[in-house]
Length: 48
Image (cartoon, rainbow, N blue to C red; front, side, top):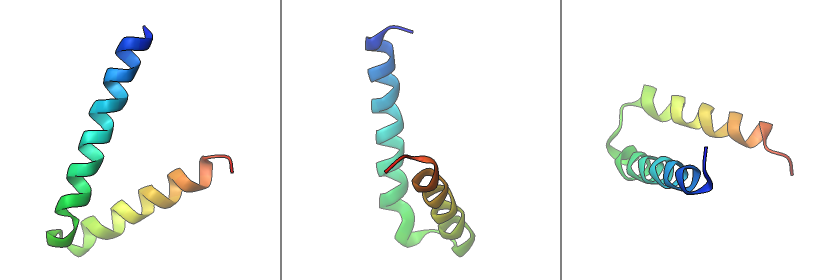
């Protein structure tokens, strides 16, 4: 994968993430909990 393709993919993921954050206040409790679990998982596997 070229670096340009990688950057485009990261931008797409970032935009989807921001869209999810904007919709979070109106989300179902199950969606909020699952989103928090995903964030905790990402925070756990990333080195400090």
